[in-house]
Length: 269
Image (tube, rainbow, N blue to C red; front, side):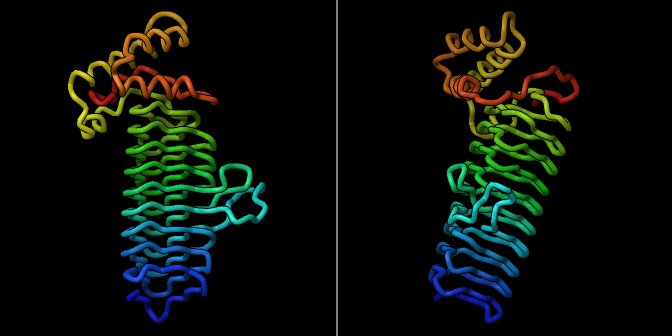
């Protein structure tokens, strides 16, 4: 049986799993779906066409499914979809999508979203993404699996962050960041590879060397950038990690965060 604190307010029509826990002073509007074994701790507001996946935990003063902060939003029944096993901490805000995009903001499974983070309209977030405190994502941002954001990082609208990338704290990301890239700085540059993340993903030593070699060839080798990408595509076609990096570059529709040499970031760069 659903455990609902007597101070909570749930509108007629909301669908709450039978084993969910709804804590004190939570407000859940009529178009919301709360999955099995979810736990809304206290003072959580879930509105709009929002669905929350199984076993997700939501801390106090979180606001989910609010209208987009966009002048283009026309009031349509756009959505927010949150995956399973997420941990959403205090004062997080996530908005529904807009009619001029896919109409949905999506958060993957097992995401850890720390206090004060904002995920704007039409963002697509992969699985196992970690947001440290006070991360700001503008609208239409696309984040791959296993990305890690350091505290206070901000990402401008329409930017793509490739899988396994690391965004260093207080960085301002203006352009796409390649998979497994390490982005750093107030106007972020690509300063190397997320070696720690690659190791934690179980990447073999031989593949790690190929990824490093491909990175050097693409960003610091002879010839034009387009020529270097084509050469790397031919040289490393049998290395899946490099292939995904090259595909990301080749499908870019907007500027790419380019690499700079940084000697002060140690082995992980």
